[in-house]
Length: 144
Image (cartoon, rainbow, N blue to C red; front, side):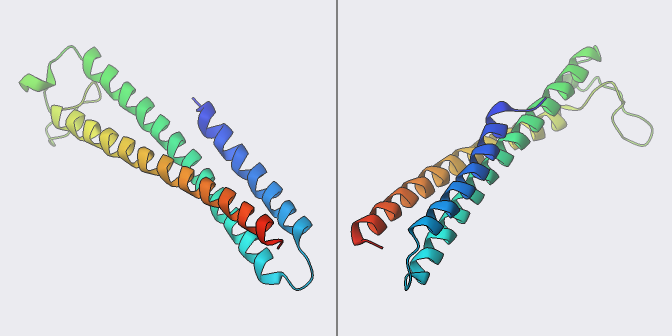
């Protein structure tokens, strides 16, 4: 299942890069090569961060989907892994019908870390966008 937000962010990042590079070329003047390069670099970096954030959201969706499948397998096995009544195969592996409570705990911890990472990515995208807007107004104000 594709995540709509992730797809929109990836599309927006591509449009942002194309529009930003086009604007940089439109505002470019003779003798202002460094200003144009800084503008282009900031547009590309911001677009890359937005695209990466879309990828993170997509990966979080995949983790959520896989975790839900694992939880359904554990509950459909008809055993309570927390009580340790899930039988193991002779080689010590978990049967195809379910997972152990250690697996569930590891998945929960992974989801918590992924959500924290998502929150920090939101912060960086917002900061990058604000810096890009401020840089735009500085260039316009200086007449560059």
